[in-house]
Image 1 (cartoon, one colour):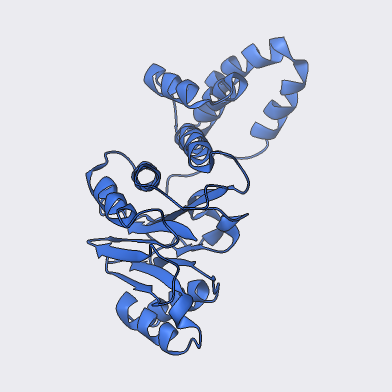
Image 2 (cartoon, rainbow, N blue to C red):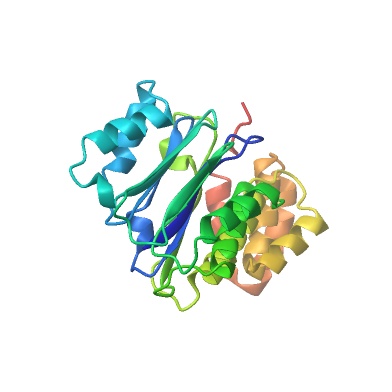
Length: 281
């Protein structure tokens, strides 16, 4: 009923899942991930427990193959399940039950696994694997390339409805509330992959701006604007970047542009001067 990819970025260590289906709110069930541990996609008559239990088995030292084998053995309905799993070392494993609705299959690779069921064509999951391996860019952009390839190869024979992406940082920081790089769900849309791409690109634009300290380059501004970042946020990001660099005088100068347009921006200044800028330590 679904196609998905689970992957690790070898450069950043980020772990992620991307998925599309002809079912409502797929992001609430399929993708699971934890920094420094692994990621899981559980689908096809979905048993959600494969997500948290799979991650827990990785936590105690099981490989993805061992973890998945244990979960499948304990599942009375494993014949209809489809699951993909990748750990923080890039090891991958997948399971497609013999009663999954065809076309159905999976293909693990180095640092990723793709899986699909209820497809128009058995070309879907090989196309996803090839697209992910050859696509440039960040992990989220490469995951999107895999979803695009699945659609081009036929996709879900029922059509499209929902898509989601979850990407977490490569290393645990002790702050799990800050660990999600991307967490976006398109619950009901006529072209969910296209909408997911729009939102992921926008999220990456906001995320880059929120990390700048000092001057926001013209290139970064144009990239964020092209991604769809709002103009007032571009201006506010410039203020925040100066504040993060500890330059309150420059932050004030930049904020004055916003204050002249709308005096209530002055309240933001009162907040900035009341708290210290973040430390790089």
